[in-house]
Image 1 (cartoon, rainbow, N blue to C red):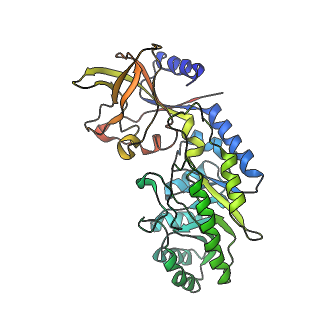
Image 2 (cartoon, rainbow, N blue to C red):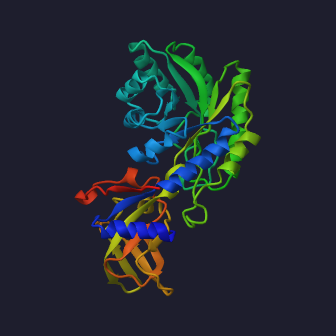
Length: 388
């Protein structure tokens, strides 16, 4: 973290703001959005911002000025996107378990598309659309059978995952659509997983999408848009060295390898890649506890503010910004929650750390604040945005 941001955080804490809190670097968020737009606009692609990564009102206020739409996975996310000023005509509604009330909400707002994940879901959307005398635009979410080579909890494109429609179901589903007059098939949707840091899985996705598109052409079923989801990862180990993902290489790969038919649009649903690096979790050291094999730095932030390390065994860079010592010592950095899994990192090398030191956990802009809980009756950590 650069010295300017460290000084800003110290000033915030010294002004009396209680820790823990989420800290957002709006300058980096804007630069990331500008880089993404520059990379995809040249190809005429459409990018929807994935609210599940971060749905804070300030984040949405910025993203809607740069990206054409929103990717939502709940009715409340659809409503928040509308309230934030996203055009409903650019909202896609995904998710394996949409309730009747959520479908009704999306229909009332005349969203761009439902990404549908099962035959029964098609029947339910038909039923709800008929009641409202509307025609719902849908895309079929298809499992392409591509291994994302990421953590198994966030892999979504295989047959053993709960998401999507399998290839062997397509014949019956496309036949059924002929008898669902309130549905209009406009697209195909794919999403193979999250935090993908190598481009090879995306190339494999492109080649598989080409094959599946050929199947629809052979059946004379017109498709207006292809949605390849998101999944582009960030560098958690070296957040300053790679603060902005290589959007140019990412979008260029799809331009090279995915074959669009005349008039077709290519859509993306990016979340983590947009907001991941702009956020940090700021905490204070409550206690230093000496153990037999390690020392513990016990923070006032816990898995209630950042659950990813406990849930995914994920890595986040951790910095003590109160000390500048050259000599580093290993600490298990843990939180106050009554769970042994409440641990941010083991054998983390930090300067000699003391009670009251300010510790910053990096790269929490995505899946930090949105996954927070009140377990142990914890207070909600506030969010603070560093203005340019």
